[in-house]
Image (cartoon, rainbow, N blue to C red; front, side, top):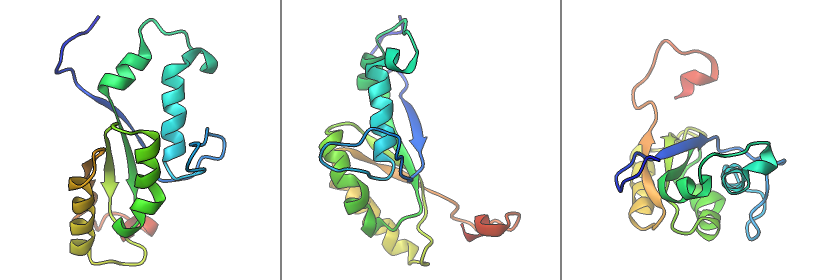
Length: 148
């Protein structure tokens, strides 16, 4: 029975990958991260379908305390078509943020990337903002991880 207007929020940060086994948005088809978010929302609404019997109203928790999030290496200029248009249709009014943002392929001007993505956040009802991932060079990482 935890109650109150300022309870902490929860999130599950999804990869920006496709999920062929997940439910698909009716208007958007298969979209990165979006299908996983939809699958989780369905699990909150119908937990018995996933073998869970809740003791609390999970959908109420989802509606009042849950925020969607994802990580991406994509360019800011790609995200409107790849994600945000469909997200707004499927999750209207539901906050979302990017937990790890750093576009690296091909190498891009990060100042331009940040200005573009922050402009998207200020003009969106749902997009709260982002965390810029690895803004300093880490010399202890190897392989593809060294690209960040």
